[in-house]
Length: 329
Image 1 (cartoon, rainbow, N blue to C red):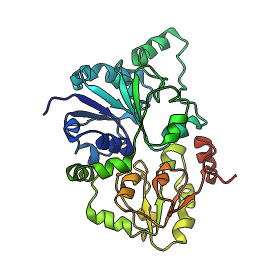
Image 2 (cartoon, helix red, strand yellow):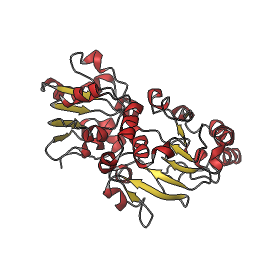
Image 3 (cartoon, rainbow, N blue to C red):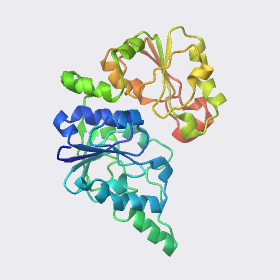
Image 4 (cartoon, rainbow, N blue to C red):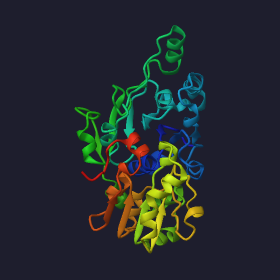
């Protein structure tokens, strides 16, 4: 193992891909990767230096588990003392991992700050308990951390890697340092070694790329059952019209979308890859039509691709969760 000098805390394929494209190969090899379980093990097991995988969605706001994460970090990755930190700062374990370290915020996805700024749910919504015991627990789990000051809203966030210019116009970034990143340019400039490395990390073969290039219609799904509580029947109704009325359809599930498309649409190919749609675009995957409810992944497609944004009004549960997004006025 090489001497570690970077900590990378990410939990989405997009954020991981951004880090891999931004950092030189030597720095990647000197990085301790940490995730809170959304990244599939097929990805994390290929990362260098034994990626540390916490199960953030099981941790919730359990003060005992969060305190354990906070205390054990000095044992599990002592390089935190001297390493540079790059992180998504809104994960369940972000405050505990980052501690008092300065860090660079990694974009969760395109338009991620813009979307959060328009989300009906407040970004910082946990109030300190009133009882003495509650205050003690809160202090042990979150005291003197960036908790409730996520998305770069704290003095420890030294820089922000953004991939869409509109994010820089939000109140999250106002008068703060940021770097606007051109993912397409980074991919074009990347060495053959790095490109091969990234494709290996995301288990993407040339055969799979050719398979995706054949699609006339690509449906980009989202984890609405997981995040909004949709039933299978409600979920099917969203995409059924676009699947039934098209010929060469390919479904690209969101990394957290565990819906069994093969069961309900056995004749429709499913592109099971964790690589972000943006990287597929750079490789020449350009369907004639792209369909989504409100996924920002569709934004990276060129203007000659017809983009069908179904909008959040397609289902009340989705609307209640995400607000008024991409609906016809």
